[in-house]
Image (cartoon, rainbow, N blue to C red; front, top):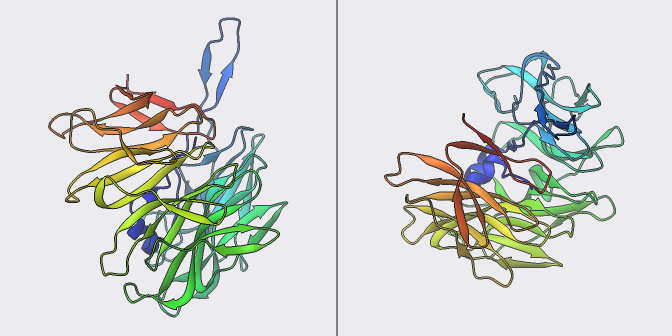
Length: 364
């Protein structure tokens, strides 16, 4: 089960911020006696020489972890590139890998010491997809150009773009297929740059544009073991386009629709091709968690009595976890939804790992 990338919470912000941190649990679980008691150990992974590291690392089922950490090289707080800590921790951030108690600085595109990098996801082979600055200033935005990259076999691979100046990777499956967003060379009248497109990449055929749902822009957020891809795309070309979630499979992009509003996004995809996320209702004033299962339509999972909620992830068994408002909309609780029933988990923090089992950290 994978959680949503934070920038997936607003696709419009995704195109602007170009940083894809991910909510992943850093828990380590061990069974040590005949009573199978669970003992949790907090491990300080340190930094890469700077004062801070990301608190939202990525974890696979082999216990390998990826995250971002400050190096000792000062960064420019006026530019994107400090792993989400711009202005707070003004140092260059690099992706790190943690394996068997050892932390390795995976660097960035050359000149690595001066460029920042940020992880998107790690697969079961320990390959990491993410982004890196390339040392060039984008003449359109005045910000560092960034590229979708993959760290594998001790090397960093620049995945390129679709003809524009920017790309980044959001997910990688165990087959080494990577998805994300890449700009092409077509001017976008509704942004300061060119069109942004969802892509899929593999090391045999390179990067391919997945298309859109009728508008100029799209982003791919998740790819499962079967190569199915979930993302969001514009359905029209206006200053405030409708964005619908999609499922891409075997060359076809399927519009998953919405719950009546003009905005919906995916936050999770399982290996059965089921998609969860959040969608605006008619009028675009509130949003509800949704579940989409082929052939559709989208299912409204409801709330815990309040007006809004969001589905964050789904297991291969169809268990959905998320958060929803209570009556009065002053409080939200975690929930698990299964077989048509939503269970209130109380005031909890929902976290996810690469495991298909939901993980809930309760306040006690």
